[in-house]
Each structure stands twice: as structure tokens, then as C-alpha cells.
Length: 286
Image 1 (cartoon, rainbow, N blue to C red):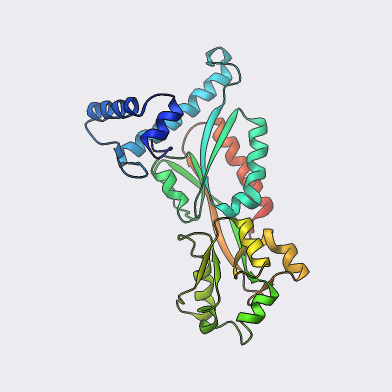
Image 2 (image 1 turned 90 degrees about the vertical axis):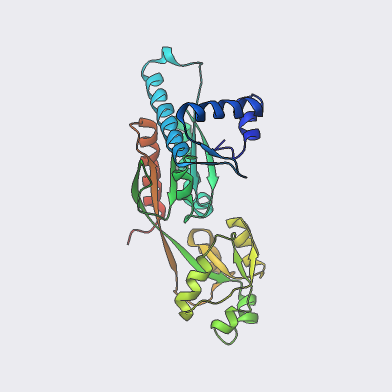
């Protein structure tokens, strides 16, 4: 339920009825004497439920290790372990997807990626919904290890025509309050963070919501608004003049970290090594 978000979706994943899932959860709660799941939309784990989820994930990883060492224990040939992960969309659209592709080609896993803002992927770890996450938080979640990956650089940019229309007199609080900006979702604060650095106060920004890094770039090129773009996605457009920075040489760097369950698992260690190597090639360290 925690991973799927509802009893109905969990039932479909397990090929049983929602009633059967509910009864099993209720029986486990009665046995343990505490609530494990908050019956909300979506379902959320209680503190005890999250702890149980983390334990179950570690057991699965250890079972996979044992099956690799003793193939006779494997339930079926070609069985793969599902690794649930959380990552921010900009990492997934730039450096993280190739890392996953390379790892999945070598390891007996299926990856299940949940996308959220880098300031919120930590919550997926806390509630036991994933075994690892790319997050802005350096402080490790309970039962997790944390390692720095580097800094993702963003550029505040728009089309030349958009800049000419909205910022002919310069980029100040008044102009920013009128010029539409591009925002990934309601959690996205990158544009606000950049604005505070430029004008040293909060400015209410008119926003278009576009939950896709690629749509961000397309909308920027089309003159729909300005936004903070991952440098890796717009470097060629900036070099060619199809996009221009609102204020030259004012990047915003966002530190990223890799947090993963503290389990003695070769699979998880292998993924962590691949992630660290991929980040070293793509993220800034200076």
C-alpha cells in the first residue's frame, strides 16, 4: 500500500482482492498492537509502518544476495528484484537515466522510479516507499547512508524575444512580478530562490506549471516564459542564442546527495557506485 498509494492498487500488484489486502494489514496491526497504515489518499505509513517497510526492503535485498550465491534457492529462472527509487525530474532527464540503464543491463533488477522535487524525495525514504533517493538533504534518513554527489547547475533563461518584451528596462522586482515564469509544480522553488538572490526580497511570480524538464525547454524556446533550466539541457541553446540568460553569469547551483538503505547488499552497493560515478561525470564538484 505504501508504495502503490492505495489498497486497490496494492491488490492489483499482488493479484488479490482489496479486501484480502485490508484483512492482512489489519491482522498484522492487531498482532503488533499498533497502526501501520494511515488510510488516506494516498495511503501513508505510520512510523511503525515505515520501519516495517524498511525492514522488508532489506530482507528482499539480502534474499537476492543469497539467491545469487546459491542459485538453487531462486524461486524461478530469470527472477528480478524490484528496486524502488526516488529522484528529481531534472536529474532523471540529464545524468541519472543513463546510470540506471547501465546498471539494469548488468544486474538482475527492475527499477521503479518515483519522481519528486529534490527537496521532497527524502520523504519517500522516511516512509519506506523507496530504498534509495537523489535528494537535496545531506542529513541521512533513519536507517540510511548519505553521500554527496555534486551540484546541479541551473541557468535562468528565456527566448531573446521574451526577454526583449518583458525585461527591456532590466531584470528588477517590478518586471519579474509581471513576466510569466515556468514552474515544474507547486513544490518547485528554484525560480523564487533565484529571484531572491537578484532582488533580495520575495516577489510573487506569475507561473505556468509544466511538469517536464523537456517541456520547460520547449516552452522557453517558444517564448512562453522564463525559468531555471538544468545547464546540461540548455547549453547548446544558450551557445546558439536560441535562449539567453536573464542576467548573465548568475547560475544557481543545487547540491544533491544519494541516500540509500543501510543494508549489506551488493546490489545496492553496486547501484550506489554507479550513481556516484555518473554524478562525478555530470555534476559540479568545484
